[in-house]
Length: 377
Image 1 (cartoon, rainbow, N blue to C red):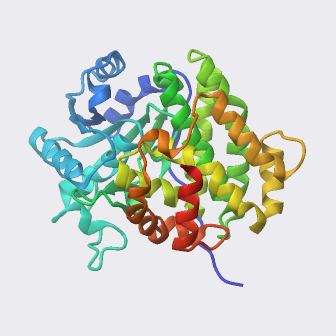
Image 2 (image 1 turned 60 degrees about the horizontal axis):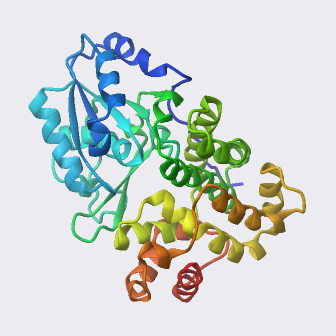
Image 3 (image 1 turned 60 degrees about the vertical axis):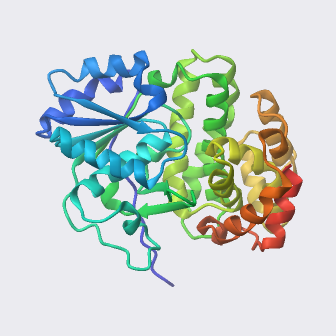
């Protein structure tokens, strides 16, 4: 038998009010001057102002230069802000984009060269060899699970192709998962990020890679998210549904160290070419790609259906996803979101060469991806 190495990530403080523990935690770690890495949308909102008030007497400043899909330039700007403040720690506060940037600002601040030189598939990839600043993460959405991930996905500045820095060294030293931080999310954002969480759990389970522990986490993450997402969208103030979605999100991110599949390959391409929100892109592609994958692993779809609480076996799973999308307001296809056939020459090769395509349960070609994109229009 071959040897497979397993690793699970960081300590998590989970529950309503967890954000109130951050200042004491950082002080105990010897930190005094945090840089808060967040996005432009959050920087002017009461939720961030309230959090900053909880950090006293720490001397915190905000870097809010993140918008849309994060780029390498945003990481480098964050590193400049870190040095300018004389910071000694980093607080990632926000959704997946802010947290992905926060995890590698410390790399750029303490190492030479551009952050792009540290992506795992760079031809002369630089090692992360120096100690990194102490970093904690507070998710304000329930989707990517970036707060517990060992990777940071950032886009090239010009091509917007997604690249990944992958290392256990960029894990948050602690996560403060407070569902109260998600109560103000609009329904559309709750829906899109929630579908991202479900997609992570589903695709990681379908991946042919060997990781039984991740399989168990993925199925339980799907079970929790399947019962909570529609409620979280319809009842924004339902704290239990918000907490369930935050847990499902983190479980999906832990599980996808087993890798993902064709839904994410398409979503990454849509993000690069059309600057589409990642969770929305997953939601628009998931039923089309999974319907195509079904014949490759029907027994696994039976397990997914069981976890989602469905009767009728695996054949009921994709129809359930379509119904769920309607319930949470994600209607129409790619064409209704501005994607045209003229985008296909750029979308198809990006999806086909995306690293997540390698672990799709059914091997895919460029012709397959072109057909899938057309069907999802």
